[in-house]
Length: 112
Image 1 (cartoon, rainbow, N blue to C red):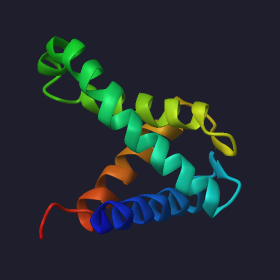
Image 2 (cartoon, rainbow, N blue to C red; image 1 turned 90 degrees about the horizontal axis):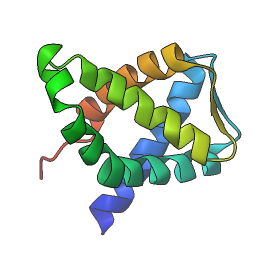
Image 3 (cartoon, one colour; image 1 turned 90 degrees about the vertical axis):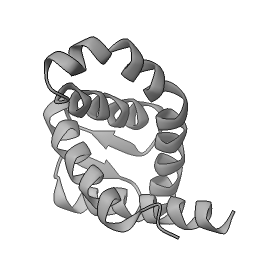
């Protein structure tokens, strides 16, 4: 439970950092960032595996690059579902999802 809470706080902080890096990403506050991180986590746990499975042939043909598009779509969906969290367009979501993936790789790991 403690690890889950720490991961949620780190994800919220990373989303907040994204709002500083990208002018097209708007967050109304850190509380909104917490809600957006929770929504994004739920989307990644429930919807993303289904989309990945359906898009598997396209992902194979593009040598995995279509997964970046899927990540951008999930981030855009999270911004649509979270009041106070706004992403201006697809390209902003695309590059923000790449930065978010790198930050997740650096700061949130499965190491014990």
